[in-house]
Length: 398
Ligand code: FES
Ligand SMILES: [Fe+2]
Image 1 (cartoon, rainbow, N blue to C red):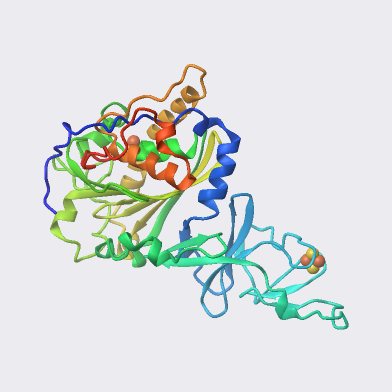
Image 2: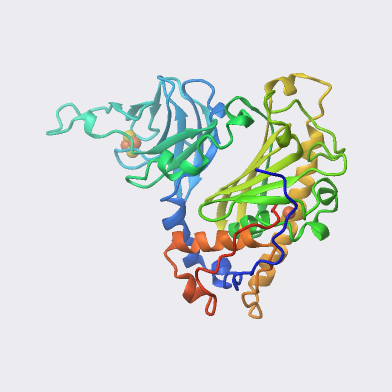
């Protein structure tokens, strides 16, 4: 791929408008999203490293369910429903910790191995037809990719490797499995989760909202390379002596991989991975956001920064130069997302036209509607289906 100046300003805008207000205000739509997206699609939930040893676990709330994500005795990552097979009690209340070798229900002491097998059930010996092997904890599908844990609550999900085929191997040069988390910040924002993805997907807002970011990567330098479908994004080019997205403009760590190709030292890549992951790859660190809808107008977001392990041991690097840059930029974004939420709730709001510099936000909406099983032609009356443009356009950032 060549580094080309953004050249898509003359492309048609596809006549696409933003989503109607109900998509940001209706509890029924949120329930449908939980059903069609968050319980059927692969969701990134954490880094594998969070479960360093057998027995390590954390709880995850998703789509109204509580899951125990753990590493079992054989080293495998598993996701088990936090629901006892006896009378349904929550098994585990602590948000994270380490199991010895078993999980014991606090109610009547049914006991499970870490792979979910029921291994102890007091006073059930003489129960007619009762066999412990018939009562394991219910589990959900788990996949790991590039050091990330993904889960899927569907009964029989399409395999991760099939679903994510366009991404497999795509980021190998960034050494993702071997990077270590140096920082994580959680945010609780008053905006619908889709407003966050739509905001991440364009840099139309950058000049006004992000004066510092705009100095590092001018909004008109970059190109999208995933332009349709569940994975969307591209890169922006570091300019004016900026070596990374940091407050100082200098790198804040070693290259994520010593072999990182030269052109990647001048770029920052931004991808949204449907539905809940935003992945931002820098020469010296990787940032990812995970989004969890809490209410139609509320989203919990965790933002994580990963570094080469030697960076974290080297006191000459100030990783906060990068994490503070993005914490500031995140807050600038959350503010406009919250302003959007307030506006789209208004009786005065009507879908507005996407500009030529928001092709990825528009592509996200199309993908979202398709995943929801909603017909774009009825949502966007007057838009010509098939008039999608080439998808080139300047890139988005968080
Ligand atoms: S509900 Fe768990 S042992 Fe009874
Ligand atoms: Fe932004």
